[in-house]
Image (cartoon, rainbow, N blue to C red; front, top):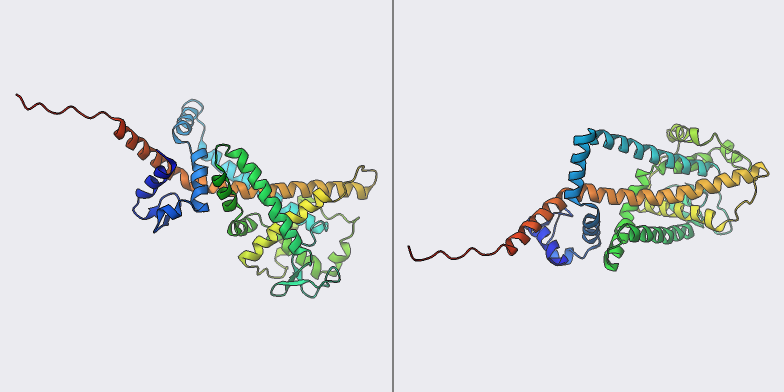
Length: 328
C-alpha cells in the first residue's frame, strides 16, 4: 500500500480520530501532512518494529531470565541522574560566570553596556545580548537536530525530515525541556548571585565555587531563598535557546587555552569542556525526550496498525473460491 493509503487506514480505525496523534480531526488529508503527524509516522515507521523486537525479548527472557521491568527502572534512574548532573553543570557554569547574557536578573541590577537591559518578566530583565544568544541557539539547535535526525532516519524523505525537525524544535517542546532539565536551578542561582553582594564579589576569574559534586545540593538549598521565578512558557523556551547559544559561543568562538601552566588557564580549560558538554547534552536530551515519547505512545498503535495492514493485504491476495456447482 502507498504511504497515503496506509496513513488513511490508521485514521479510519477510529472514525474521526487519528490514533497515532490521539486527536480528533475533521479533514484527515489536511491532518496527515502536519508536522506532528508526519513526525510521529516517520519515527514509528523506523523505531517501532514489533515482531522481531517482541521475539527477541521473549528469547532473552526464556534463556537469560532477563527482567525487563527491572531494566526499565534502572534506565529511568540513569536518565534522572544524567539530567540532574546536567542541571548541576549549568548551575556551576552560572557560578563561574560562563553564562551571563542568557540568565534573567533583577531589574535593579545595572546593565552590561551603554544599551539598557530589556524587560523580560515582572521584575526581571535580560542582557542586551540576550536576543543575539537566542538567535545563535536557535540556529545551532536546528543544525544539530537536522544532522542527528538525518542519521537516525536515513530513509526519511526531505519533507519527513523537515517535519520531524520542526516538531522537535517547536517552542512548546522547548518549554517542556526547560522544566525537564531543571534549568530553573541555574536561573535561581543567577538571581541569588545578583541579589547577594558577597556572591557578586566572588564572581571573579580566579574564584572557583564548591565544585560540581556540591553544585546540585547548593542549587537546591538556594532555591528556597531565591526570588520567585514567574516565567511564561514562551520565556522558558527563549531562555533555553539563549543558554544553548551562549554555551556554543563560548566553546566555538572564544579562544581556547593552549596550556595549563597556571591556575587561571586550567580553570578556563575546565570551563570550556563543561560548556561544550552542557550544550551538546541539552540538545541530546531534547531529541531523546521527544523521540522516546513518540515511541512509547505510538508503539501500541503502530503494532495494531501493522497487523490490520497485513490482514488487509492478505485478504486482497487470497484467491477467490471456485463457484459451487449447480449439478448434484
